[in-house]
Length: 615
Image (cartoon, rainbow, N blue to C red; front, side):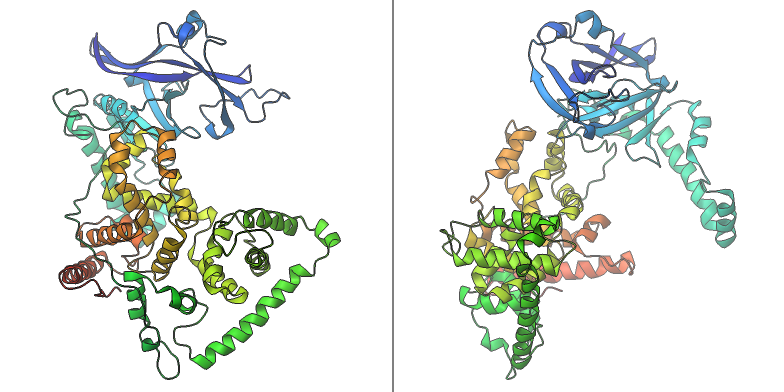
């Protein structure tokens, strides 16, 4: 017998078909080779039944009622919640725990399904070639990637084309080839569709199928030790890799970004009349945006410039045209305000939607920026304006209505404009820029793409601590860092972001900058999921905005200089046009990067008031 791999802290979750609770049994996962045959084994800890804590799970609706015979937390993790952690209570007898031990030859493994349990740990479900799934294995201390690397010495794990979480297993021998050709599905569409595609483009149809053969043979004949990582998973002479769990990406392709250039900040925009022609048009809107991006706006000018940045006034409008716009927008605002003001209490009792919006708004208004003198105290007119503008927005956007966080977005605008009508229309422009809660998942995925390209080590560490989803950044993205910086800093940060320079989703680059500024604390300490969340939340009011903005621009410059920047990263930053060829796109980005870099270096050498030209 030869021990190939071993990992402690792997919990087997029993299938709770007869009770309302599910018990996890701690144990070891091993790969053992006997007489040349490798097997995957799990066995409980020897004293598990007497001393180990039992983690109990229960159905969300488990308050009695009809029994659910198919309840299985291992397969439907979102349907189960952690109920309690009990020590020395209801122990699993040793003989019963031992009954759950299993040994499965890797040649008999049919599939491996990966998943992530609610609020935390990764787990896998193994299925044998007989079609029998084994109990879910939860990796409370990480280690799934190491396990897969060890398994890859004996079998080929290939992602299912139908289910991205499912990996199909194929032996590394000649017997795998017949199975492999069935799996390849060279022409996996229906027969009639295949004929039509072949007639339209015989070359693409034929060689598209043969390309799958090439990929299969490349995976089948690749040496086991080089297929995953240049070092062996069990080589003690080489440094170990982070114990990460990034979705079982067996092969990762890094990108060399090159050195990170320096970026400089400038002085705030302090002269507005110089940018207006005799009729009041803004002569050079792009230069105004560049100055705002570089240094923000002098407080005395914010009230006017913000209305342009947020789309209340067009940049090309004259003074006379803006007077007309204000008059029309004022009438429109008060018509909408009358709609909800004229609803009687009796009517509102039959309108649960409006009643719900009002309740949420009143609750949030009473706790929004109360430290600011504009909103402090009881019966403050600022609070009344905050309430009325948000209620009117519900009339303006029936589909969205009011969602938590909108009061945080409105408060700085109302503080600067100190005008009910103007603040309302500026809010509508801001809401067009801010992603809704429903789109937050996509934003977090885009943030992960950027972080993976910038700092794979940090990304892998967060994965290993079950924080790879970056859910702790949710508040950052939802209200644009409103709680992380001081009120005055937020005014500067938002006006910088409203310029939409230097790229799309620059707020995601800022989030990456903050995370990278904390990498030493995160990686260098013994953090887990909960302490990472706690640390990130405690960054409130401890971040230096100018340093973060400087580092964020430097990150952008570093990314656009990279000639082999992944397409996904380009898409997040809006650097590639899907209608143009990749070659032309890369050439233009390279030229742009060189131009920006030269400007940044010139600015650092000359003065802090230089202005780069962003597209």
